Length: 116
Ligand code: 5GP
Image (cartoon, rainbow, N blue to C red; front, side, top):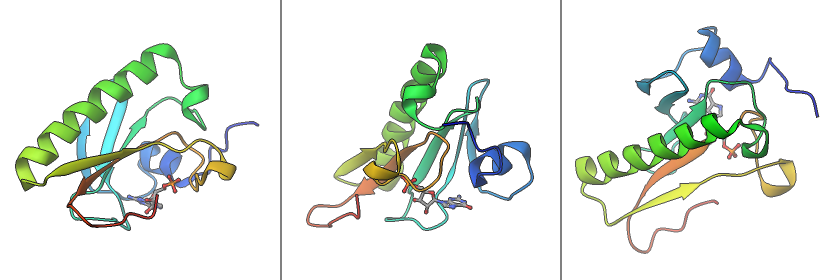
């Protein structure tokens, strides 16, 4: 399916919609989730227009995974949580709601049940 450049993350990347930016480099942008499942819930997205991870270039995918791992390490240390949930959904059937590839980094305390 063709990439929808009107999706909210594309607007955030173009600076047309607000977000709380946490980190940015050549290939990725990291910002706070608007409806966090836990304090410190981050989203890591590639800057390239790609609906799912299956559409991202090899270079973009490697950058996303590298940054997602770094964010998970930083969040775990900063918040002192027991675990970090990393989620990445591809396609509406899998539960993806925003059609721009993204990785969730969610601090996870024991016993808490997340929505994904
Ligand atoms: P998905 O269900 O597609 O895996 O996750 C999409 C995520 O994007 C959800 O966790 C949702 O809270 C977040 N989200 C949706 N709209 C916005 C927005 O406008 N700004 C930010 N920062 N996050 C958003």
